[in-house]
Length: 140
Image: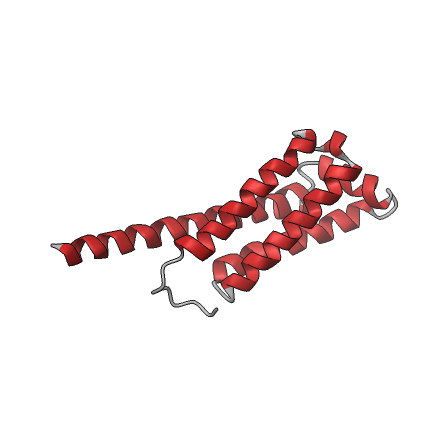
């Protein structure tokens, strides 16, 4: 009976971990492909223009979006997941700190955006370093 509980617990943990990976990748894909590459949310280009100047804001925004889309693919691939997590933490942190100080008026929640970024960072870290089941066969 005890082994059955452990197996069910491991399956649940793996399921929650994999769903979380999908959600994290979806955030990168939506913000990258839809908001930036396809320019469905012009505010992203406005943020880039305010930080870098308007001359190259559109191509820079699309380039950032392509990078974020590649991030989504990297995350779901399972290749070097801890490296991917650390890269995400750095990028989210740097991106949001820059926006916090330079363009808070363009952010959905103003300077409070940084709080949501920290929560997302903590979720990513928790998912990989606490929740990730040991038996997953990914290249670390």
